[in-house]
Amino acid sequence: MNEKYYKIDLHIHTPASKCYKGAKDDAEYIRLLKAVSDKEIDIIAITDHNSLVGYEKLFEIKNNLTMEKEILERYKEDSEKINYSIEKINSKLNLFNSIHILPGVEFTINPGIHIIVISEKKDINDLKNLLDQLGYKDDHYGMDKPIVPKMDIKDFLQNRLLENKLVIAPHVDSDNGLFNEISGMYRADSFKNDSLCAITCNNHKQQKNIQNMILNDPNYKRNKPLAFINASDAHKLEEIGSKISYIKLEEPTFDNIYKKILIPAQSISDSYNPRLKSIIKILLVLKRQY
Image 1: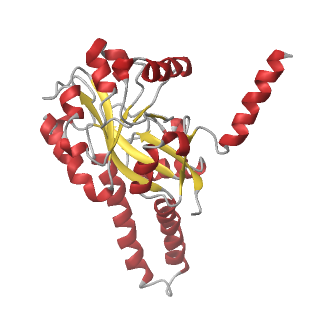
Image 2: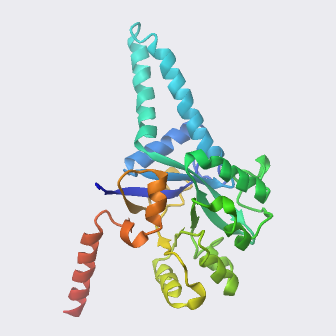
Image 3: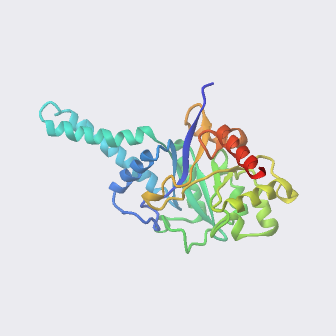
């Protein structure tokens, strides 16, 4: 088995999110992929608020570029200008081919909690069905508030459509976060639900507190380990890759990603060389001692 670490950012917004801070034109989608490529990120998830429009727009653009290229190639012997146009199209298509792009949605769930669900491309209809079940229609797409969905967080996490999906609680320690917005056994029951497989934190110290809570508080005891990952929650190009993790895979397929996130201690790291990071930590401890 020949595994290596892939760089991932599983929380990226597009112009389809109403709160997106960049340009709202179609060209922004290509600029987004260029920013991902420039940061050498291998795997991303498009996770717009209560919408799949951004993900679908990306692949609509790809299909249009492919058709345009097919038409131009019929006449490439006739003009250098046509060849130049084909080269420009190829550079854009290469972005799609070099990045593994997963479909996802950042759902807003009662009482205002954000939950990311990421699927394999072939299961995208499950994400659409979840949007329907929650009551999200065209005029809600891209909005994260004020919306009151039909399902609360505990019921949502028990939904059968979440089977074999990556379910991530983002920015749990801040506004709309699973840890911050609810408390008591309601929060504990949500944290230990087996559908939830990963979380992200904005504050490193709070992340340590949550990790200790899950390990030591019997109310939070889980049947499966919980992955702690980094993700940018990018709402503009400059934020893409600002927080990333690495995942150890043989191939960057959804099935492999899903399986590895379920065994995070062996597969997830916040550095490309986790062994080197461990050595640095030991050296820092020794330095403080002397």
